[in-house]
Image (cartoon, rainbow, N blue to C red; front, side):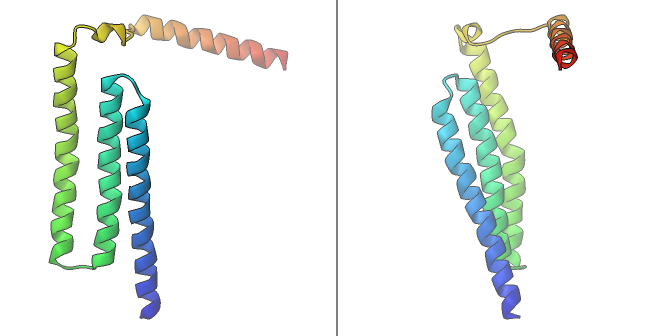
Length: 130
């Protein structure tokens, strides 16, 4: 029985440390990117994944009881609310920022197809030389 406790402890620590690492990468990513929508995407993704890993680690460490069920409900609520909040904030930024087009590149489907054809052509030429 003691071995199972150690396995549960190690597994919960792996998830908790994984969540902490994701949070640290998120902080670095938020300061790394200049554009606000990129920062929001990194923050939302990092929060969701980091909190998920941390709560899974806490649920494993806590065992099966009522507190674990509450943590699962918090996790499900966060997974539903975080993307919605990020989407609302990014829509607000998109509609209120006058200089948004300075940082964006709008592409049509035809441009994407042309770029892909060009890349395929270059790859085929590179393969022919080898």
